[in-house]
Every structure is written in C-alpha cells, then in structure tokens.
Image (cartoon, rainbow, N blue to C red; front, side, top):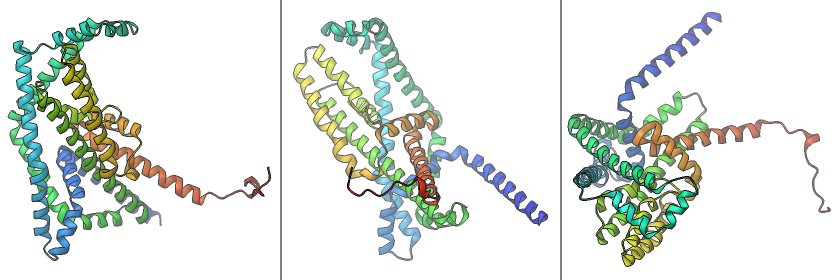
Length: 364
C-alpha cells in the first residue's frame, strides 16, 4: 500500500511538473492562443449550422467558418489599426511642427470659462500646471503611437507569425473544439457537473465580452468618429478609436473624449457645433450602450458595472491589450467558483432544529 501511494504521489508530482513546463513553453504564444480560443467560441454557432448542412466534412466546415471570421473581423481590424497609427503619426507631426498647439487650446477654454480655475483652486491645483500635464500627455501619446509604428515595422515578421499561429490554432479549435472540451472534462478532477458549468461560464463571458462589449465599443467609436468628421474636427479617425477604447470601461465611456471637445467648441465660439456634439453624444452615443448591451450581451451574463470596471483595468495592467477580455473573464470565473462553493456548502450543511425559526401563524 505504501509503495502504491508513493507511485501515485510521484506520478502526480511529475504530472504537475510536466504541465507547468508545458504552460511555460506556450507562454510566448499566449496572445495568439487566447484569441484563437475566442474566435472558436464566438463562431461556434456558425460552425454548428454549417456542420448540420455539411455533415461528415469537418475540415471544410472549419475552413469556411475561419474564412468568414477573417473577412468580417481580422482583416478590418488590421486595416483599422494601420489607419489609426498613420492618423496618430500625422497628428504627432502637426503637434511637433506647431500646427496644433494643445496648450493654446486649453488657454482658450480657461479664458472662456474662468470658473474652471476657481474650481481647481479648491483642490490646490493650478490651471497652468494642469495644462502642462495635459500637453505632455498628448505629446507622450503621439510618441507612443510613433514608437508602436516603429516597433510594428521592425517586428513585421513577428506580427504575421502571431497572426498565422492564431489562424492555424483557430482552425483546429473550430474543427475539434467539442472533442477537446469533452477530453478536458474527463481529465480534470473537479466533477463533471462543475466542469461543464465552468466551461459554460468561460464560453459565456468570452462571447459576451468580445462579441458584445467590443462590438458596442466599435459602434460607439464609429459614431463618435463620424460626428467629429462632420463637424470638421481634426483627427476624427484617431478620436473615434480612442472613444471605442474608452467605451470598454463602464462609468467612463466615450464621454471622456466628446465632452472636452464640446467644451472646447463652446470656448472658441462654435456654439451650434457644440450643441450638436453634446446632443449627439448624449442621445446617440450614450444610448447606444443602454440599448445594445442588453441585446448583444444579455442581462443575466453581465457582471456588475463596478466589477467590470475594476477587472478590466486590472486586466489591462496585468495582461496588456488582452486584459479587456481576460480581466472580466477572471472575475466571472472567480464568482462562478464561489457560487459553486456556496451552493454546495449550503446544501451539505446540516440544519440545527433548535436554531430553526418557528413557523409563522399569521399573528404578530
């Protein structure tokens, strides 16, 4: 018995070591693998429909599904990122050349709204200091985009290698994903019911975050970019993408971009464009989130807004750009694990008859 126990513990230790080594081996490809899993989950319903019509041809089904994904998601994202970098570089060149002067724009706002300086004084802040910080932040953002463009040029091979890996892994996940999930359910020692619940939660949150939140962010960013372009504001594409990024954060949203723009238009005397931008931002951009999110995400899959905000910010710090999905996903799995624990603990905990409350007979 002791020898059998030693064998078992030795095997489990080696299994843990090999698994850890495998994860370390895959760590450099974490991004492509994660997005391949996200693609497989999001386009799984399409794959199921195609599989029913083309039974017995899993390779063709996976290839068609992946082609649809490339056409409607991957290629537009690559074009958008390239355009964003070009727009950011152009804006940075204009700032460096003096064609755009952020400090002067802030001074105009201060002269038009003297109450701002008095308001800041209550918190021991000076407008000039705030202006310098904002100007430095804008210049730093331009430098960041310039660096990203340079890195992208220098690491073109790495970028396309990651893209190819993502597409390659996504193909096999679309083809064999169901079998892999069943294999994991058999292998993991958590109990089949718990494992299916956790895998369902993983798929649910990934779909909701990528398909729902990302699509809503794209819509809000597109609406913001269009209204900026119609009003003749500089860098409409750039600010549209910035609004899309901020739209991923609850309680912050695209208002961080269009509200200061409306204030600036008012400061320079463009009252009508400022009113148009404020009305459009409040009614169209603002309500897009409230109307579309319950439809695309679903109320029962939505985490509380404060959890989404904190987990998204924490995910961005920990995982980089992948964090806007990974953060809420970790939070959802955390809540799912504790939900299972509380449910099963409550079911197994014996009830003390003496501590139970007596039945109410309707009298007070």
